[in-house]
Length: 384
Image 1 (cartoon, rainbow, N blue to C red):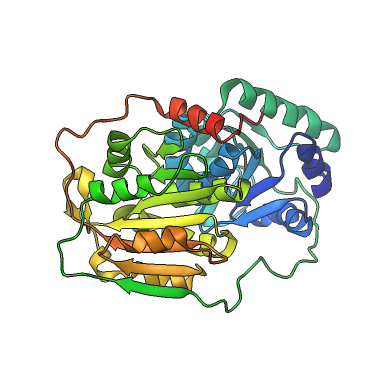
Image 2: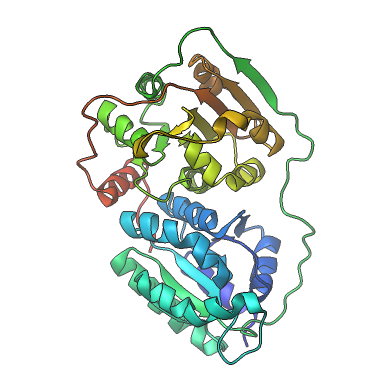
């Protein structure tokens, strides 16, 4: 058994100061230690996939990051592990607990996952080892992980058994919150036909200079149209991990408060990962600008209807702690959104027309090339 400080301080020496995750009783000593240390940062995510994407965004911003989850949460993290971290080549240190470990009595819901945790990691081509159980094992384990991540620029996992870490109480009663901060709300509708995605993206490009902004486009037609309009060094085109654009943007914004991070989301994607609204509302700064383009369909898969016609996204953003929340069908609201100097994250729900341009191209640059270009552009670097 080790003490929480023994592992976390050894990890700190390698640059790990950002922790993202979803709690497990095995991880409680780590979480308590991190949230009590003003020089460490912890993001409590709504689900494990968003935790992983938030950590990935922090890595893009230059912060080595640790993702912590119960092994049951590996299912929630499969998409960003395989279509974000793998595809974009983003190194992350993953700590997954081993509930339902064969040979140990546990709750019935952990039985199957306990049997397949290591096999899931193998299938996702994530190298792993057992989390260190003594102080002398910590430094060699972390060095093996760091060396592999540095060489391969992909995640490395540690599987934590029950009783690996001694109890550590916390002096911090609660995570950060914005209290009763009032959200500035605005609606802007007109009688004209909604704008096309292409028209809205043109406006966003014109108002997001490369030297101060990073623009993250959700997967599907949004990223492809953004690329078709202007393939700029400050762009990141999500090609998978649907719904994770906002959590990735949050991580980047936390790591780089000097940059304005514009997240271009979609209605289907936002519905898939709506829990991240609350995480952005709690942790996001005024450099987070979240724009949801809503055409009420899954456009790139055949225009099947979403349920967004029944959802007031702007009210959700307001209730989750955003400082500014707009809705409407008039692209002029984007001008106010981008110009605002409110103290917290900003949001706009903009209705647009379904459909896309003729002969819509796919990016000719690979995801990892796009990422390297972006990191070079913002003065970041691979951190391990």
